Image (cartoon, rainbow, N blue to C red):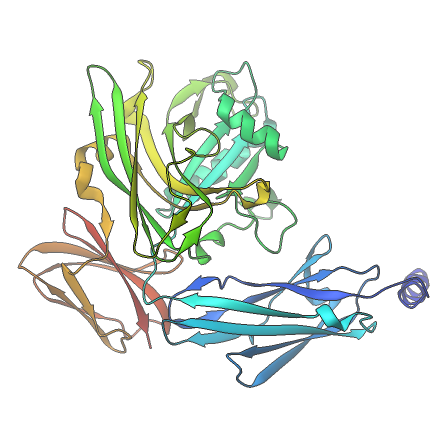
Length: 457
């Protein structure tokens, strides 16, 4: 009887004279930048009216082709406040060429009737490139040493994101007076008002969320991290590299030249930045089995470009194909153990709107390896190796410009590894067992890692 009364109350409210039903499509994700292949997309709906919704239809049309539709109920939608994430197996398109494409979608409310249909439609422009750089994610975790849940969150991060080659973990301690406190980190924490522990993927606001930060959550299998594995689905048109890394052991001066190659015309406030992190720092951590003898990992010791990146390190107008550089110098304190340190370099945006201060792409390496490799660790996509045919059906052929040894890694766009092999000269890779879609081939010849995007038919 109680459920019946609630249902009646909802219907009365929904159709009262003052109630306004107004639903829009806010976004289609993750589609801004893509490479050729079959792509699944999500629809983000938003309630801009004053009533709820019972059922609705989503229509979509790709490049003025046939119109498709699905019918959904409110309970099919994952809500975050007034924003809803809609998924469906039918939401897929095939991007076959390197060009600009359009995906048009609109919502039709079945119950109650939408009182303002004029704002129901969204047209998404999709830029498709034959190749785009690998997406590397900076996972910032804002925390402090007296935070109880931070210990459980660290255990999860250490066994998942920290070992994922696509992720650079940056633990940022923000409580003044603590051993690991970082003033620049507190600046960011205060700006966003983060709770602890607060994980942030590239300071990227997922369209289905109401804010930038996500959360660690307890589940049947222990802690897990919401949205883990999602950010790398959003390609970005910039590749970041360590172009030069030097360390003077006598003076402890570190010099890092970051490089960025751009794949699209951009305009705005873009900035280089570097984080230095350190492992195995002994200090207190609440909730740990031995709180006074806990070893903290991936602790951010310095932000060389400050909390928001180095202003003026990149021009306001960038052209496709541009390669830019900026050099940072830093005096590493004597008590920092360089053999336990990592370097994270990235390109980020700056905007008066805090929700638009996204880290676009990054690169990371251990301190010692970055110094040892120096200019040899640049990730490039050049003509040293040819990978063909593309698209591929049965086999990939790798043709080297000389008889040199190399290692090959084949991954999907999320970083999942499908095969590793060694070669010399020309090599053939069997791809018949791969599902159709987009993949990366990484060829490491000991001097550079050459990356090629391929499509499996």
